[in-house]
Length: 141
Image (cartoon, rainbow, N blue to C red; front, side):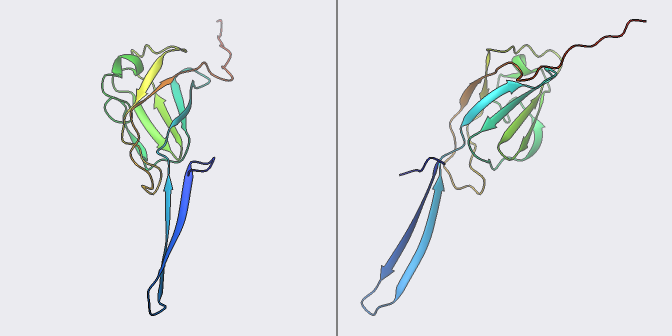
């Protein structure tokens, strides 16, 4: 049974007739699942948070990478995705059309850090407005 943190650990031990004991500890965690998705303060990126750290790292094109194929119309052709621990940042590209309240689809295949989980299924996340939107500024000259 998984705990509230999505993890389960078991210690298994065996004793043979001669009294020798062998033991092993086994850990398993749920596959990463989307917890939230919001626009960044300035609206140029999406920040998607997962339930646990993933085994994904670095940055790469989003469409067909971190996002399921066909997402370029929402995030812009050439949008770049970058991973850090349990956070995926989608840097929107020119032509992005995603708006608060719309969904993007995270590609299947994520694993918890250390590959201690099964691969995740594709997951849709509804993107929320920024928690603290930046106020627009302008200069008259």
